[in-house]
Structures are given as C-alpha cells and as structure tokens.
Length: 136
Ligand SMILES: [Zn+2]
Image (cartoon, rainbow, N blue to C red; front, top):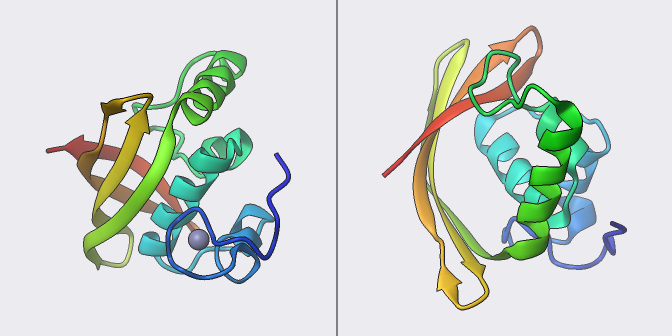
C-alpha cells in the first residue's frame, strides 16, 4: 500500500506520516520501544506486513511457522480492521527490556475490538523488537 507522505500518520500522533513512522517503515532504527510500538500499530494499519514481521523477536509467541501464512493473517487483519485510535498509557525501559502499555481502538465492521495491551520489547544488538503482550 502506498501511503501519502503528507497524510496524518496512522499511529494517531497528529503528525504527518513522513515526519512520524515512515522513516522507521523505510528501515531507520527506532531508538525507543514506545516509538516502535507506534510504528508497528501504523504498519498493521497500512498492511505493511514485512515491517511487522521484521520487528518481531525471533522467540516471540506471535511468530507463525509459515511466513506466507503469517503475512496473510497480518494483511487480513489490516483489511478487516479500522484503526481508530492509539493511546500510550505507560512506557518503561531498562537496558535490554522494555514494556509499553497502550490502548488500541479498533473496529471490525460494527464490532468494537479495542483492547489494552502491555507489550514486552527486547533489545537485540542495536535494535528493539516486539516480543509478546498481555491483553487486559
Ligand atoms: Zn506514526
């Protein structure tokens, strides 16, 4: 999907996409787990499956054994979901591990599928990766 660079970023930061998550989607390293969380939310919204997959830790429980099936499920989720809002409620990080608690406002048709998740991120070398999340 081609995302207009001047459109508001799908992570609901209020900034233009080109000044927000686009650099990350193009390969720039994300310095903070909170920004990675936002960039992943935007990637889900835009159907950027490769970004979601590349920023998932190799030992994450959300990895699917078949990459093609994993990609399809990300794309289906993106297609079937309206990404209506994102609020980061808390973020903390130590040297190699971080947690970000966020509320994702999501709709699938008329159904509110919003959730609050406490995500765990792990540092691998010079980059942060999503590991897992607990939905509350
Ligand atoms: Zn963004």
